[in-house]
Length: 189
Image 1 (cartoon, rainbow, N blue to C red):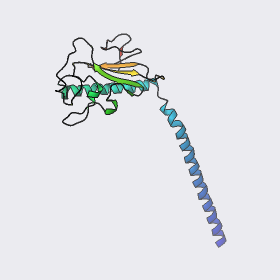
Image 2: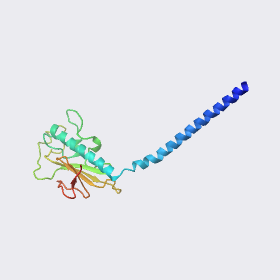
Image 3: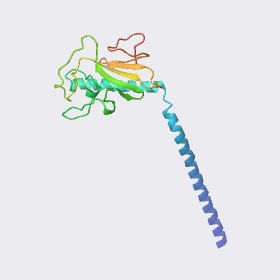
Image 4: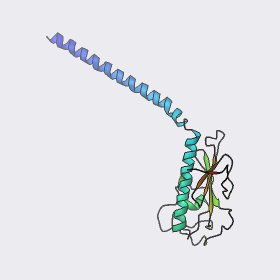
């Protein structure tokens, strides 16, 4: 009887070893597949994906400008991303996140900037000293924010821009400041 138990136990051990080896092999296959597929998926973004991301950043800038105007700029808008990225001296959050807080910053294959609008009638509003966050530029009654596609691969294809109207525009060519809607400069829904 002892011989039978020994033989049975040895078979059970061999079965468990086989199951463990198969489990490790399966995990290795899955890990290798993930290691190969993830970089491909990261590069699978389409130009529309990059554009959608850039539109989202411009909408975030619009939101930051609105909050800056009402809480910090005494009705005026920031004329640079740096001024939007400064938190109020009394405490609180900046008006845009720091990772997009510099004119010329590149995100998602686009270069972003905010400048004073060149539209007729745009004027200074208050002074630098009167801002709540020590802005470096005098707030203005209008701003122009742009997102330009960058890089040799041009993953983002269209040029994008927005202003105090809050409307984001797209074009196959650079968008002039001030924005003038036309057949080639169209509002994005």
